[in-house]
Image (cartoon, rainbow, N blue to C red; front, side):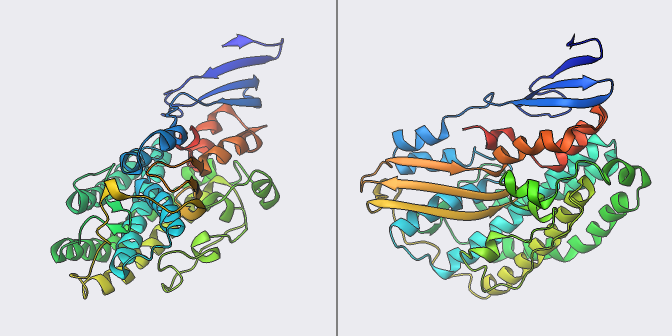
Length: 371
């Protein structure tokens, strides 16, 4: 901390600071308690993930993709494989499509639960935070039974998924969804009826539709600002055009709106999981992949782009192939990279005490922002 002028002070929020709990730093200029300027410092968790896609064989690159966002590994695996499958004009077996939607929607729930738990922890609502984390842990246990991994699952393969999900696991998921509604009512009571929570989140960190569009914000952060744009509806992939769901939208654009919208999205994801289970329980023995070996993955020459609606917004993967077993170019579009840029817009003029609340309301993951 140092004095910039007589009235202003520069404060450094270093990586892994308790406010962010992440590999991201900030330089903040304070005028008293008010934030007058803020700059973000990225690059602390740099992985060279795009360069690695050009240096490694595709089969070797697949496990590394999930490290881009360790809260949403299934989405990044699908985004990459979807681009390759589109390039090679491969159609997935129907069973694999249902399983991908099932696991991605479960993963959307775990990602939102993790964010909401951290959000409540920042507000010192520890009981609610642990309830969120406990519910997340139940789904991670299911992931472990499906793939052997809780965070990095490496379950998707070129042309489908690694293996069928047995009936016992599908029944366990069904039991979890049936009990989810009652547990969720308790969590809503912790939050929406808490006057301290409402005071700390309402009318704080407001982002209107115009600013959200100017900064290329997508996902929940955009829909909380009044624009109904969900790429599961806008550019349907897998089976989303055959499933019944809606993308909720609110217009206030504050921290409370983003929090409440994630709660609503969790309920919608549960309904999508139930729809997938109805089909999967009747078709447990269907073909799950095209039986293409990792060492034989060799997409056609050309370029392709995939669109995936992740928990934090739009994920895009652009791949260029020359017909070999290594890709010529891999480029990622990650939503947290844009959410970090709008953070200054949402914070100017507010107190330093509001920083952590607004930061967590945007659901920023530095690993996803860095390349």
